Image 1 (tube, rainbow, N blue to C red):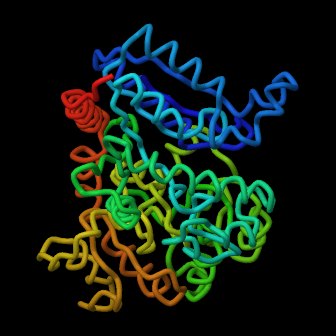
Image 2: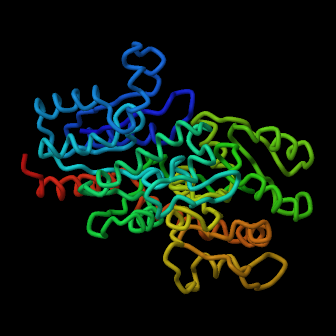
Image 3: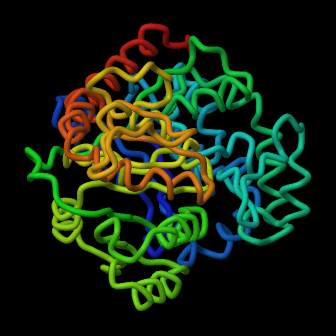
Length: 419
C-alpha cells in the first residue's frame, strides 16, 4: 500500500510526480500496489464538519485512520509505504499500520521530522534552529509553516507528539547520503536507514554534448539564482558561451533583467517535456546552484540521464547526486584531471575548494567559487559526459531503483509485526 497526501496541483510538486512514477514502475515490475491517496485539493470542497477537524489532522486524522483500517483489514498488504502524511493522513497512519501488523517504510522527501517548513531554510539562509529541541519554538516565533504563527504552533506540536511515531518506522528510505545523516542526527539507527534515490525514465542515448550552461528549475531564492548571476557577471560577456535559464517563479523579473542586460544570458521561460529535452541537448553543463540543503533536485538526474555533467553547490543531496559525497583522489581521467586543461591557458589546477565527483563538480555556495569553476567546467564537460550517463544507468535508472525498492519491501515484510 502506498500512502501519500498529494500537494495542491497549483503548487508544482516533484514529490507528487515521483510517487506517481514509482507506483507505475512497481506495477510494471509485477508488484500489486494499492494506493491510499488524499489530496490537499480536496480541502475547499470538504463538508463543514470535516473542515472543523482540519486543525488537528496533522496530529490525528480520524477519517483517514478509519479508512486505512478498513483497507488494511480487507487487503492485508505486506508493507505500507508512506510518503507525505500532511495534512489529511497524519503520521498516525504509522501507528494504524502497526496495529494491523503491517510494517511501514517511509521515503524522506524533506526535513520535516525536525523542521516545520521541511526545508532547513528561512529568510534566505540555511536555518537549523529547531534541531535537538523537544518543541520547535523558533518555528513558531518565525511563522515558518505557511507564514502563520498558529499553524506553525500546530506543526511544531505535531512534530513533538509524533517523535515516537517516526522512531517506530521499520525502514526509512533516505534519498541521498545527506538525508541519511539527517535521520541519524534525529536518532534513527543505521540498520533502519537505506539510501535509495528516485529514478526518472530513460530518455535514451544522449545527443552529442552541446554548448554553454543550463539552469533549469524553480525561479526562487533558495535555488541560488542570485549566486549564479553574480558568478556569471564576473566574466566578460561571451567569455563562457551561453547561459540558458528555464523555469518560472518569483525571481522571474530578476532573470528577465539579466537577459536584457547581457547577450550571453537567455531566458527560456517555463518549458514542457519536449522543451526540457531540447534545452538539455543544446547545453554542455547543467548548473545546480542551490543555497539550501536541496534534498534531491531531479534536474540533476535529468542531466545525468542526458549525459550532461553538473556543476553544483556542496549542499544537501547535490554532492551525492554527482558522486562527490565521498572524497577521492582525482585519477588521471577523472573530472578534476580533465577539467584542469583550459584551452589557451595550459595546464592549471582546479580552483581551491572545487571538489570533483564521478559526474560533475561541487563548490562552496559563495560567488567566488562558481565564478572560478565555470571556465574549468566548460573545458572538461565533453570528457566527463560519458561518466555522467554511466552514473545515471548504474544509480538512477528505473530498473535499478525499482529492484532496490522491492528488496527493501521484502526485507521489512520478513519481519512483519504480529497483530
